[in-house]
Length: 170
Image (cartoon, rainbow, N blue to C red; front, top):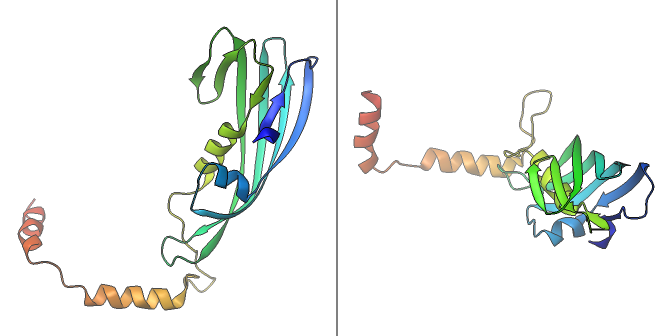
């Protein structure tokens, strides 16, 4: 993860730009099993001040995950912006989601953890194929058919009937 280390020591105050690609190896490093393919680009602008680094990240691209309904690959588009303020101080501390304090003696800052967390937050919790223009699901039709068959053949356990009646009487 060396390429995500930003050397700020020795830089004069001003704005600097960086570009990163988050490919499969990035997610493998963090042991993310549900991302099977990734083509995410990050453009970072860093404004260096005397005792502070101000980052602005533009994140965009595609990741491939398994559909929660049918299990087939699902390509999801990611697009977002994030800001991060890194203050130089006498201790390490996370003041908030967007403000970190690092030791003044540090000469570089690793942005990989910040990128990982923010990209993961951009991925929806419920990931399913959408519908086409006729309202028909784009999920694997064989799997949808099998799910329907299983739903129809399911007989509820009679022990739950008593609890269902209690819920209905409220």
